[in-house]
Image (tube, rainbow, N blue to C red; front, side, top):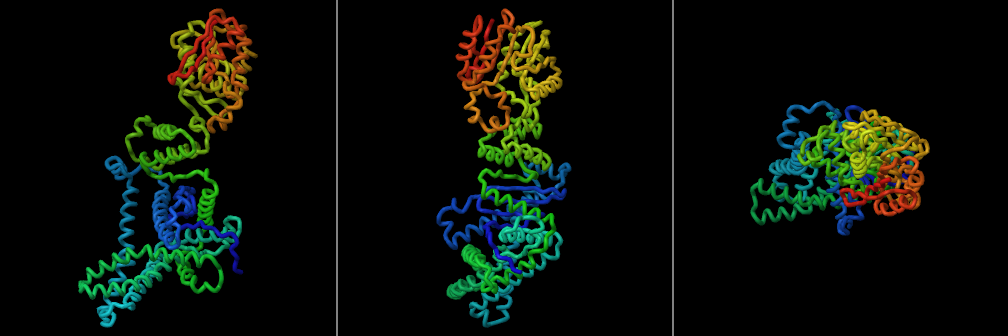
Length: 613
């Protein structure tokens, strides 16, 4: 029973090496199953039709534009799929390494360039020059044709072109790899048909659908060949009259001029063919079946029944292309292939910029993944497939919004490695000013307390630095048991002697301290929603929320510090921008402090408040 299409789509595609590419209005996605059996996805945004100039959307002209863009995108997807399909992660060969070191290009790029040039030469030779040559041989034996070079001459030439095309398809069937590509072609058609039939995109549903489709590239090429026969014949007759009038008798010149004219006419042929294909695809009526039949017959040759794994590729590509059309925030994806720093780094920065992520994160990802300084990124070099995969794994997770240092698992603070995850805030470089002020204040034998320790970064840095030449006792407290677990791990990692206490500020703390440090929550409640998404959505709010004006914790510290600070002791606290004056007022009114001072960071922001008792 013939199914009726109830859910037509504009998404089209093509088979690529070991996979399928699908192209929508705003994005194209390619899914490849590499030699390791893993699915690889690459998705790129493209300019939607409505963003093109008005003239490019007019009938016939739009056909030329779509033909060129589809050809370029298709070739790019084809070559990219060939790079992704080979899953060999071994060390590059000596030749590959030599080429990368001396020419700063990959062997794959060289092969791609040569293949493209050869492809164009072969296409022109097979479908333009060869038919002209064969027709010329016949014309030499048939005086009537030779004498007039009329419409029959051009019809015979077109017939040769069509015959060569069919023979070319039959020739490709001799190769196993190309027969496999035709299976992926079938998977592409079946998936699109399944969607247009209104069925859920499952492997079983797709398997039951037809592998023939009205908008197939094979049908389009057939229409192009037929239209080219008519157009070349209509143009060829007056052109022949010009030859005779100008006495251009040398076959080589005649052939070259004809070849150039045919190449120049290709956009016209493509534009007309596109409109015909579009019209035929609008209906399933049996009245137009005779016009579709030749294309269907050719599709019988260029499509084969796919395997389940091939169908999975087609479904993945279709769903991603559809998602990119429907969701502007749907992220781009990149194959993990051999590439260069100069290609991968700008792509990452561009993607980050669109997401509002600082471009320096791209440099950190590449620097840490390649184990080279950020300054070395200016020196271009080839990145291996394994290195590229490592970089992209971090890049794609960062694109979800998750902070980079949570993904990496640790960060550097004051020269020490501090493990971090969603249980604690990520230590900021400006907090190192707090450590410097504390280290310069602490004397041998002092008791030191770090309130709201979080990851333990401040307490650990102070304990490790001071213990190099002075004996001190460092205690750190936090209300979060999860945060304390991270802090204890960091202390072990850095061999820092810190006593951790679970406490809501001073609640479970005993004794008096010469120096008390604190980096409490100081973000006003209403401003949390305005923070950057990576902070707002991932870092713990308990470590951010400082109450209505951001000063609640400073008031609570001021209310009880007199019981815990020694005479001559020092309280050193980090604060938010424009908060220092209010904090000093709080302590001056609630405590018997001797003095208060503010220390600015390198950006000139009042960052640390020091209160002396």
